[in-house]
Amino acid sequence: MSLFARIAYFVSLFIFFAFNAQAATTPDTSQGNTHHSMPKGAIDHNAKESHAKESHATESPAGADSMENDVVKLRTDWAIAKFQTPKSKQIPEFEQLIKRAEALNQKYPRNPEVMTWYATCLSTYASIKGGLGVLPHVKKAKALLEEAIAINGKVENGFAHGVLGALYARVPGWPIAFGNKDKARSNLQMAVQISPQGSDSNYYYGDFLVDSGNYEEARRHLETAQHAPVRKGYEIQDRGRKEEIAASLAKLRRLGH
Image 1 (cartoon, rainbow, N blue to C red):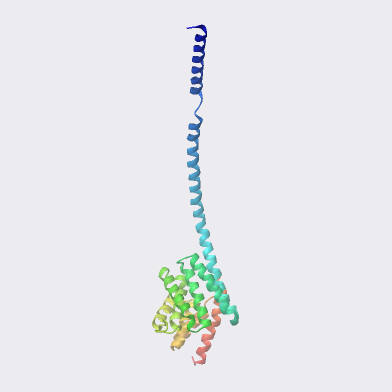
Image 2: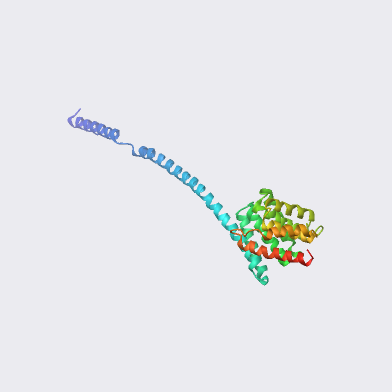
């Protein structure tokens, strides 16, 4: 082998070994990045999952508070529309209340308090407007009250039973509607059983008894209703109810009782 060939051979060997030595000591950065990125991704996922659980846990009480506030607002606005609004403006007020109640019923499905006050708005509107055209409203009210009671038999401290009993007492019977004196009495008695000293329960039953001719028993219930204290949060409703109780007692006096 010539001198130049030997030099070329040794140079090529040097380059070969130098290259492999560098490759052996250089870390595999792509593999290292994969090793570090996977746990990082897993940590991010767990953090998001934990945050979602925390959010759900904190939203539940807030959601309950929101529902309760919505019910109180609807209940109070119903009382204002019924007891403090001029008669000439009541129908449009209740039409707006019914729309709000329907929206709440969709927002909080199968909530007995929402259904009770939605039904109460419908039944009050029907009693103010009158006529056969309101029958769909009272039928809807009846269905809502029955569902609310099926979920919670003591919803609104028996108020749902009172409103349902009043509906059975006041709407026409078959074949026009669902009026039924026996069902009226049963629901009204249940309302009194749940709330024996209540203003609403005793008023509804006492008023029914006046119309039924049971004057002495009617007076006892109306006087119980009259002496019921005004409840916190129900001030407009209870004070307005006392005016209706006074009117029923005045009717009794006119009848000689």
